[in-house]
Image 1 (cartoon, rainbow, N blue to C red):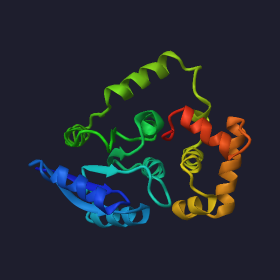
Image 2 (cartoon, helix red, strand yellow; image 1 turned 90 degrees about the vertical axis):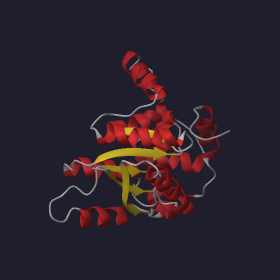
Image 3 (cartoon, one colour; image 1 turned 45 degrees about the vertical axis):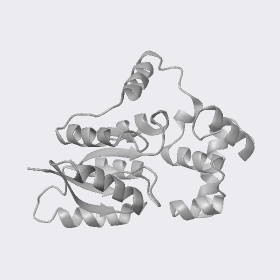
Length: 218
């Protein structure tokens, strides 16, 4: 029996690359693709008809339009869905990996890594095991040993962190609102919370903070 995989990524070219990488493995079959949360929900519902699991592994991007991959993880967890999720993201491990694992993901792979690691990760997650890189293992160990040294941005909510990264990347609030399918007012509220929690005054300070902490490229 091949491992049945559903892909969810908003970039068609990236989905194609992931699909081609996985399809080259004899024991993996990509059975569905989605570009956002709504398409994913529809696909999973259609594939669940008859009571069968929709897939063995859901390969999920974090940065989706509308509800993020972290939102998807929270929804699946709240619903008690037994879908195994492997996060594949362009964000470095130190930004989102721990959050994703805490939210219920079984593994985290960086898109910029070796494609064969993705195949290895899908196989491991399908077996019910967690897939983490040595870098993530090191972060987990450091979190256990030094629980009092958390960075201020680690206390942000998932959506607040997403807003922080997008502002620091040069996006305007109106663009962020469009990307996240939120009202500009709601994005402004998230921005205000970020500034307050990080004790920053404006977008310039916010950008400097993000660069210093490796949340965006300098």
